[in-house]
Length: 365
Image (cartoon, rainbow, N blue to C red; front, top):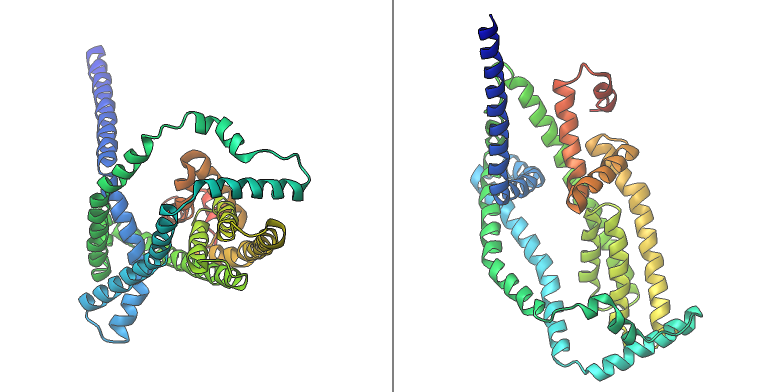
């Protein structure tokens, strides 16, 4: 009897070690292919956003599945190219300016702005250049970092091209064959549970499609508002600045704060040689007021509509999820918090519906 019990215990220990080893092996494998997983996730988002376009082309304009998928991908590529086209002239223009910089004049203008800024705020004047020199960042800065950084960008360019082509290739097949992703998920379903997996997949796909389309609508509205604001006050490169600051809103709570700082800095850089009190300060205040109004509209109108109608979650619930994800996983966690939480809610509503907390959280799904 004791010998049988020892065998059972030994078998249990070996089985537990085997399961633990298998989990470690799977996690190691997933870590090694994290780039591929990222490509699949990006392609899945593109397929979710592009699915309505594919369906419109197939059922309304009688496109073939291949033709509809290729057309949708071309639209995505054109959109990305249009976004890049806004920034490339700015980069070329800034490179030309940098090549002609008179550093003595820059030093004079920076000190002038510092004097005027200190006088306007009524604080003690501080020599900005000297302040920078005494900072730990400047003292410990290694000039060799610059060429290393540039070489790193050039070295990763080929990887970026491969990644882009991979995303386009995966997106094409996900758009062309809507059942491809579902069939891949059904591989993990036990016999007899395929129907439940299908329900989870279709409900998740519907909610996430609405969410990502809502995000695109939100960013488009903010882009239009920022563009009108910046054009009204004759800020240089208004559309590129508006697009960049609108895209920062993808990162909840932190993005808008960073966007306001970026917009203020670009307003200053656009009128660097102008008078601070008569030109720079009024433009900064007006643009900042307009930016705050846009954020109030976004926070109290756009976001509740998006979260309420797309992912069926209360704004407070979304806030807590984003904060917790940010504390655990950083900025990346804040970006993916809502879609991941939505998917988990759908899964819980199907497989854990007997629990009261799950019923409470998923009652609107």
